[in-house]
Every structure is written in structure tokens, then in C-alpha cells.
Image 1 (cartoon, one colour):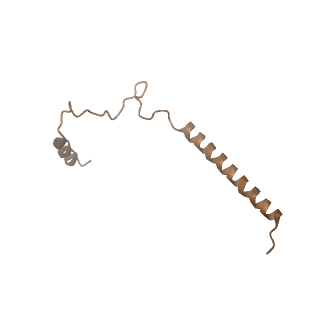
Image 2 (cartoon, rainbow, N blue to C red):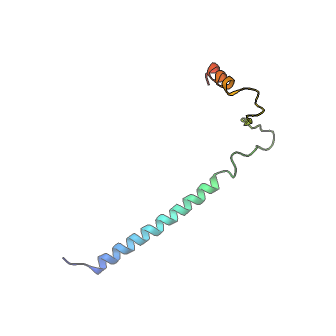
Image 3 (spheres, rainbow, N blue to C red):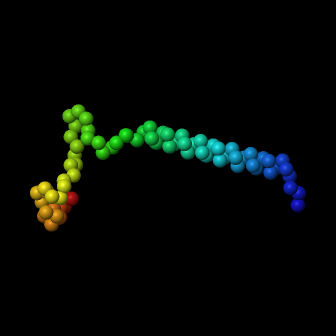
Length: 77
């Protein structure tokens, strides 16, 4: 069996270039993802927009959990 130094060098160069380009694309896609994602998607809207869901605390809720479950099944949502 003949081992060619030129083929081994070519293989090492290919693997190293593949790894460098894979890391480059990984970081570029991460940067694009951070750029496209809003800063805080759960923040209160600005202007005249209204937030559709306001979480209620369980202490001052006007419906008990059983009543909320009954309403859930009643409305079929």
C-alpha cells in the first residue's frame, strides 16, 4: 500500500477549509438570526396598540380555576 503525502495534504487542507467555512456560516447565520429577532417580544406595545393577553394573578382573579375550566369547555375554545 502506497501512502501519498500529496493526497494526505490535500485531504487535510479540504477538511480544514470545510471546518473554517462551516464555522463562518454558523456565526453569520447566528448574527442574522439575532438581527431579525425582536429585542423583547413580550414587552408592552408602544403607541395606541393594546396587548391582547394580560396575565392575571391567582389571588385577585374573579374566576376560580373550576369556573375558568367550565367556561373553557362552554365556549369550546
